[in-house]
Amino acid sequence: MWFKLTLLLVAAIAWGGSAEQARFDNYRVYEVSIETERQLKTLQHLELNPDGYSFWESPVQTNMRLSIVVPPHKFAHFEELTVALALKTRLQIEDFQKVIDNERPMRSTRATFGWTDYYTVDEIYAWMDQMVAQNPTILSGSVYGKSFEGRDLKAIKLSHKAGNPGIFIEANIHAREWISSATATWLLNELVTSSNAAVQNLAQNYDWYFIMVANPDGLTYSKTTNRQWRKTRQPVNALCVGADPNRNFDYMWMTGGASSVPCSDTFAGLTAFSEPETKAMADYYATIADKINIQFSFHSYGQYLLTPFGFSGAPLPSNNADLQRIAAVTAAAIEATYGTRYTYGNSASVLYTTSGSTVDYFVGVHGTKLGFTFEFRDTGATGFVLPANQIIPNAEETLNGIIAFVAEAKTLGYV
Image (cartoon, rainbow, N blue to C red; front, side, top):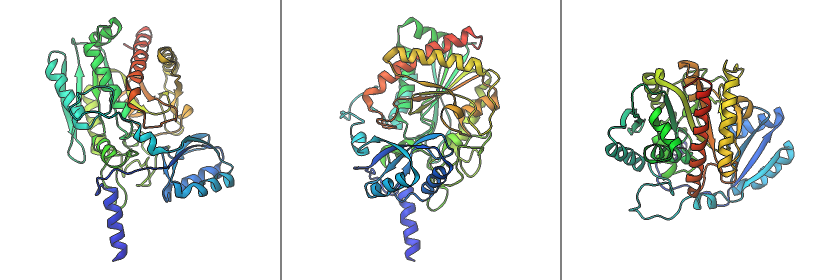
């Protein structure tokens, strides 16, 4: 009986039985380099048996770096592990809770929607609906499905005229990456309101399709309960909830960089498209795929611009030289804005292997010629908890990068 009660208690916590926000006072975040097979196997074992540790990235290969959140009661153990394995580590964050506390400004509950703070799913959706109502001749909204918890999955389209090339952007597929949806909403607002000639060229001569919040259940949970939450919210078993939606798409599913362990942050799901959010996005994309010339997936963090493919043993796309040329131009434009340096290249080579991702799916299944992943600011000082005062500068440099991206894509004949 005691064992059953314990399981129920753990399950209630995992399923959000308590709405109290988790705290991470004095938790440290370390960047760890994996150089040997022994280090890899040990960290993989630790991820399976974390006892308070949490991994921001899963240990999937040697020659990669990841971030580990270390609770105070594990400081001594982590130091012993570091010595025993000869791990190269770097302290990223001294007190994770202080970073969370400094993420958002104090604001009035009556404050209007903007880009000096992060917002809830309901607030983002209300803003989207308001934008459509105010600009009915160029904006149209749609509901393309329902999340596991019954929330609408919403898309919004900007189109000034028929026949334009299409650009598709999806954001916040990972719950804790709040900067992704904040940047996407800012970008749409600029496309609608800016008088800048380069921005208006993008707005008027391209059709834009936005999914601002691809994982609304996860985003909500990250705001109410656990700031570190990454996955969806569909229970898998009595102890584990959610799948990594960016490992759940049905193209080369579970072929590297994904986990079959349900409690892992990179759990790929029991099957491809096990999550209603990913299946709905795939079905929606299928209805517009023939109109899409460029696809962007917005993520954080690390300051990367990544090209497909990510799965183990993947070939480079036939147009890889063009992809790298466009990436170089884009990264240069981003850096020219505020000096933010992006690393660019093939995702498996520059970062680590992944499979079942949105970009690989859209390129591999639908033949979208230009599929890219943006990993926004920063490089580890705050990790996923980017302060809200960086939303606008991050968005501005992203827009400048996209302007350069589209211009180079046009020169190469893609749009």
